[in-house]
Length: 314
View 1 (cartoon, rainbow, N blue to C red):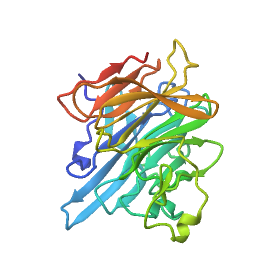
View 2: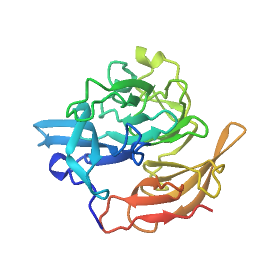
View 3: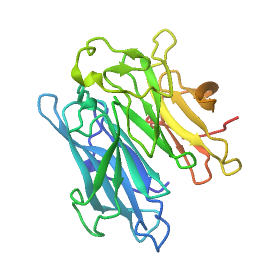
């Protein structure tokens, strides 16, 4: 196994929900004629956290591959977003490109700050759309060049997102608090507010009824399920829209739950979404679902002892 990128000295991963969260390759990564040739994007946390002395940032950076196509250049980092963090949980941390226009979408958790997801002056608890095309080739600080727009708000911890170019929609798996786990659906031609912390799933949360920020108009989750200790569900692991090369019209959304390790598909019929249990990871806590260029799905865990599984979707 070849290590493609090693930035361990820069990443805080001990405690809380810190770490290196996602990597996204520019749609033109393999095209020498593209401005995105050789570039990829990484989101992670950096800094120190000694509980009473916390200095942590959420980072989005651009890197490029080295002369060896199997090894990235760790010294090619260009900072794009630097967002100070106050708490050790709710970082979000997902990236996905819309290959139709090369826009990069980034999910940001609420940093365990109630109501910040409803405040327009913060990127926390939001989905951002970033134009990464204007960054100079050799810049080390690209923060002033990146155009970013908030396209979705009212999110708690949008751990995984997926752009479905076939329908022009963004699927958002938002990890719930004490009640409901959500799959939110964003039309990429519009913006939406999904209600956190004023709402979770179908309910209005106690304690926020009278806050002026909770008087906004909210978009219902496309699908929600109970966060239920009795059956063991605890946190949604948002997944991918299944469009294998053999059947690109499939369009089912595949997701799972961290604690039960169950995997489901969501199918749309008449504007409603229905889930079907399709399998279960037998060991370990899976934390991510990915796909390859042919649309095959994979399930990964943060546990070093666990393999990466290729998923067979019936």
